[in-house]
Image (tube, rainbow, N blue to C red; front, side):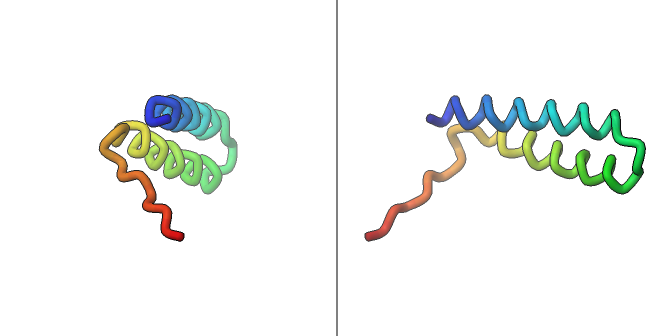
Length: 56
């Protein structure tokens, strides 16, 4: 599951980078760059990301 999450976030980061490069609106491009950085961070955390605790 952890590797799947890393792969997902890495793929989303690449998609957001592409969208930022293609955006014609500077505000949209900046939003895509922010999302790309967030996805890269999530992908880099990998198995150090704590699993949510299920209560109940």
